[in-house]
Length: 209
Image 1 (spheres, one colour):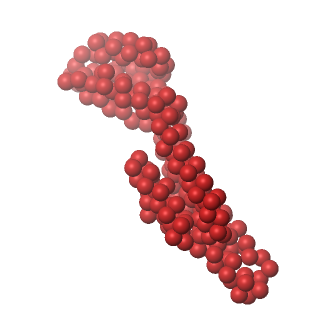
Image 2 (cartoon, one colour):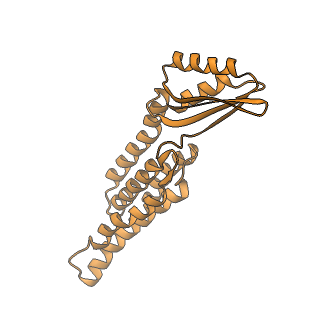
Image 3 (cartoon, rainbow, N blue to C red):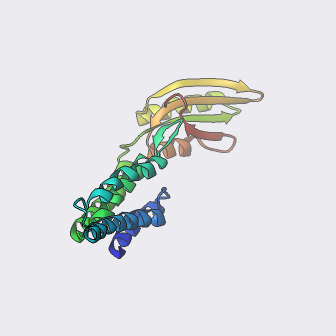
């Protein structure tokens, strides 16, 4: 159980460092609980002479799905939390492997999970592999400059935009557009267009589900 808790804690530390749900305590508890279920399944089968020692362990796979489903939130940008749900699912498998005494398998799986979360996560951000539909809104008193700059900037970044709009609200002009961008591209757009006298807003694109 200590080994299972340690494996869960390692994964949870990475989740907490990246400010993601299911951090160190949740990950530790998932691995610990599934290890305990696996151990008790074995012990109770020996105690009562049950011929199906995997009965309790097999139900873990179904039960853990409810916990993973709670990590998935459907919002205007689509489904988020899929990675967290998948992480919880594999944590349960690591806990079961630990509970069954397969420490090398559990440790190897933990290493693979950490590699996927840390290294592949970094590569996804670094090479702009993951894009999200976002709405950009710039409120300013000088519409023509911002509108033209937006078009030139996105053209130079080769980022296609949808629903480009320019409107007036009182004394202010609003430039809006929607596009699919990576986190790095989002930061680049905001940094290039934000300045004194320009109010910048970035929100998930509500036109998609």
